[in-house]
Image (cartoon, rainbow, N blue to C red; front, side):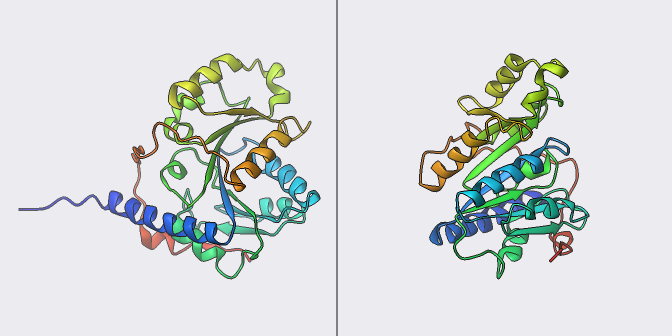
Length: 250
């Protein structure tokens, strides 16, 4: 008789345990982690550039980890804000995991960091299943990606504490149907707040930054109805051995 073991669920359960440990450690040192999820090209890096610059201008200690399969392009852009930035190469993996992230933070994250932004790998599927220890999970999408994206990626948007619409200055030019988008968001995540932003014009940046600071100060965080019932369906396997191939760019 053979026994079927769901290795995937075991790996995810182990990740959840490590994420909770990291969340506790960060809370003890006064750091709030914000996990940013989006598809490639959503404008996530551009928006984070503006937010980090605002943090620097207001003398709020902030730092960022940006994850990609290759290049240090995003770290170079974000570093211009003056905030500490670390580029992580995932060695081909399509997401970050808690143990991997914790290893990169050790000995690097400044003690006085109040806000730690994680720019996750551009992907709306796999990162949604992995808790990193964040307090605020933000799902972003741009007006150029289609109003029904929340319905196509229900885990990414359904597990978010906040949804951010980017490149709002292009909405009219591309014929973006915002009511349809909002209806799609509400279908997968009732009650979640949606912020309209534009890194180019500065629209919504102040509101986003204020929301982050509210969470840092212990303000309420939206709890998605899907929380605790994560959709962990993956079309391909992930292995712990592969995770160990992550490369720190610095």
